[in-house]
Length: 575
Image (cartoon, rainbow, N blue to C red; front, side, top):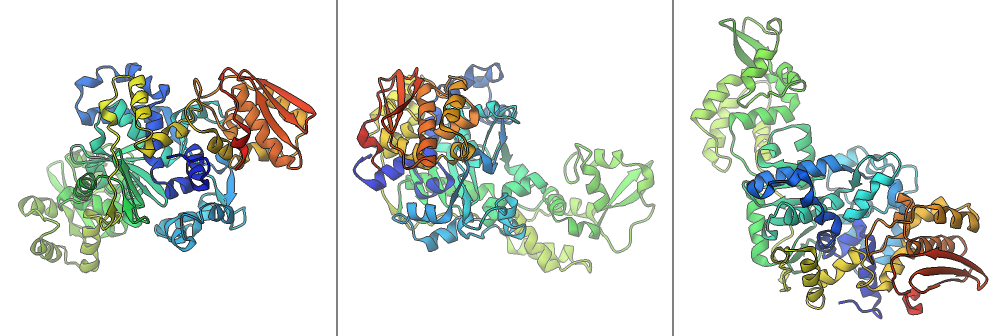
């Protein structure tokens, strides 16, 4: 639990405030802490009251998830803009975390420190892809996980018409909303983090995976479209660094696991089933959709005006882009009818495999992916001069059976008291009371109050450490401003906080959203002053309502707060 005299404890709790990708990698318990913070937020408790969720209780779990997905699609966009939360440097982050992780291990595990698991990003140059090529190679972004309030507040930023968030923000929001709004038990919700992505697996029906704003069903996973290919990329090319749920976590790097072992084994079994399918005609068609370079080896037959006609496979796949119909499923005939007759040949196209023949063959003789005899027969049926059948079948098997690189089960299983959140959702206050009762039994519950920024409960020292060390956007924006100009600009901003009650925004949230309570503005002002005028003595004082920033014992700048929080003690600034 929190110890103000332990620098490592202060560092962990301050990480619960800023929630950068690096911080979640080092402190995996933060994944569920921010999920819990979202669940305690009044913003999320307002969702079930929206007309969109009327009659949700009458729906099946799957339909409830789809309803939730559409709400998130309509109200949030994906954001990975470097300017939102600013930049830091590799040396600075390595120095911060030197007590926790070997730099060599970090280089093998994190994309911005040398990790090269997903070759896609490195083929296009990851730094150019994320807009980092204009900086030195030591510069990396502060990609911070936003709470639901910060996600919704993007509406106040220029250029945004809805809320927004990065992948971890969306995956933890999904996890919280799945439990609270869609009423999916936490026993079925598992958060997965890889070096470049964060997703949530939902163990209902055949399984579902969140991918940023979207939901990917098992059928979608194997449909061969560009969207599903992007969803597959993280699990096919990267190590899963963290798996977390209400019982704890397992981390690729750490020897101890706190997640309940049976829960992790259930997750592993369900995920492997989700990632595997047998070979049907629909799957073969989906495979060719993704492997477009093989399409020129195939053709399709179609009866038009009572006569057989033939057409190149690649031509039909191109027609899919303007149609709701697809090759391989029950809509294939509709797609073929949509194509003008003059696109067809009257005779079979020489040198091409008749794809229709596989439709009949696979219906009569299904190919089970784990049956070697079935695979051998498939190779014989696919034998052709157009391609190397051994390579094609190997690619097809890989398409049908993804092998996730999960944390090894050979861990020291350290029992932690699970957070039985699903049993305390009668009201928001009931959930808060339960989490308060668990603070001294489960550190994740304690960290959730810091992630939720409730300064009536969370410790001040970590909050101030985060505020004055990891909020570079407001500093960069005011680098050339005079002190009075900064003060006037802050004073003129909307006085409403994005957080209700005793919860506080960080300085860059105030600056980005151009609003904040007086105490939040004062801390933003203090952050700018301490960075731009390090020689000055800057003191924060006040009575909870009237907040004063004193510079060098002379100049005073006043702000008015509605938070009514006691001022942090002098020792809280000693970090």
